[in-house]
Image (cartoon, rainbow, N blue to C red; front, side):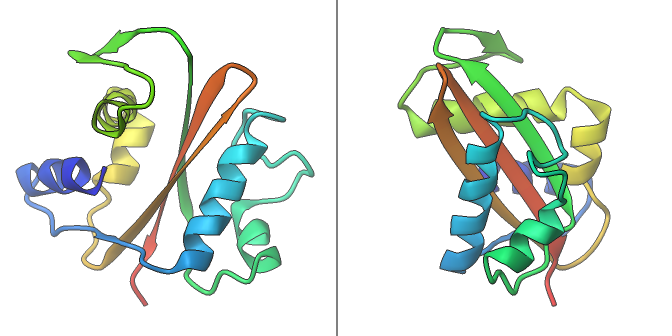
Length: 139
């Protein structure tokens, strides 16, 4: 996913994003992806925010922007990318194309700032794959 994001950012004349290497950030975004099977919304099932979740899980990196997506276990095509379960490269391309085809999600990927950090999470449940992409400043 980082490769796809950075290719798009370079095409737009922006600096590369960096992927978080913090295991707590990864665990936190994965927990957020799991929440989506309960309530598919930018609002958490308990009514809280992603900032609340980060605080609850002890995540010290700050992520302020969120892209979410959901796809069923069937084969679908978006922007020329065929979704194929259990193939990370096609899953990444599929979700990336979904996000880039929507102006709001595209804006997050192409946020015009130097020092952008990203982390992504996936969860499988209820016959769907839930994907989350978070962005925040590199402190």
